[in-house]
Length: 309
Length: 249
Image (cartoon, rainbow over all chains, first blue to last red; front, side, top):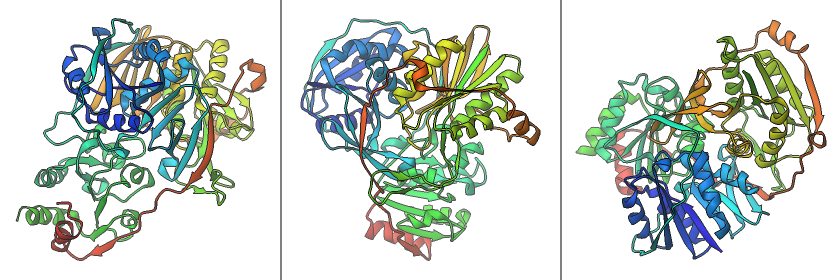
């Protein structure tokens, strides 16, 4: 039976997460449908049609779906559920908000943050902040999964899936009031090839300007540890860790981050890890490929100069 | 307004768990246990609502072995008025927990139910949303600010890319994120007082909920270990390694 993937988007463009979840879906089966629920989201649907492996794109375009509210989005997916054995979404804030509601309405379990698909019913997922990997088998007739996008490569473009319109409009009692999204020229944390991350050692929000300069010299995204976010240096959406963003870039540069297990949970699958910290005993050095014991206020300007040289 | 706060006993956040030698699960024997940090934030938020005059009663509920009464007492020391312990020695999945909590809610009729967004053991991040679905309540997950406005709740949520504010009619479900508040420490007099607060114990069977197994745990293994690399002497050496050895810049 077919697989339904919930598209991750902002009504204007499709997020790369969806291409990664489609890769996870391809490991399960071949009949893959993508649901684009939103408002005035035709461009998103067009992008989803091009994903390799996708056989159909379902579009539910209505004002009620504009803000991707779990309450009615879950009911919409429930309407479609009889045609599917697997329902997947990225383990994003929308996916994590919505899919448990879908699973409960279907009276099935949800498997969270799937890292690996072993078969149609058996998956690997992290527990205890990634300190253990659980291999779990679903005993339900339908499998509802959130997928950790950073664990899968994006499927290529080149597909040509058919489009189907879903007319069903379900209203929510929840009202969207406002949102404030961080606008940045830099790549998104989840998709960046290089991430430069700062911790409590940065000392202040102003000092993050230095990290931003380093990030810009590398075309990198900027991240932060929970300590830096809690201290008010940077906004919450930069947080990397067990409860923040989980990332796996080619290069992760941790600056002034001691390396609490909750932070490591969010970045230890990065291909190359660099740690710069003035404390030689900092736990971050135990997982770093390259460590530098240095005062970051001297090392970072020097690093920027060396990269530009 | 009555507030219901479901809480969980977990391995303390500062303890690093190890996988059992037979790979059947993680070894939690003799580890320090604590109230799940997100649940602690949920209790604190309920207490603040009560202190602000918005909440009239705070009921905490936990499902598990007799040991969870320790965390229920902790929650009462922080300011909850009474506790419900649903006793079971089985490890239940979030869906089963949500079903039991629904049965509790049918009796309690709370106007607001505050959950921690996830427990730091299973890292599932499901129970609040599942409970909201089963009780057909609106939800605001990952809350960083909660304000009561008449009969509705204004909740700011931490979402990918920033913050989002939603307005929910009551009754509603909220799940807490890290920055919603900083939980207080329980004072000694309050810890003593908590010992005399009411704690009802009931069995799963008393709630008339039929549970089934949805997921089978096949094995648990340690993650791939990263080994410490090399310590470098200078920035110049670092750039050289990144360019020529790792080839990532």
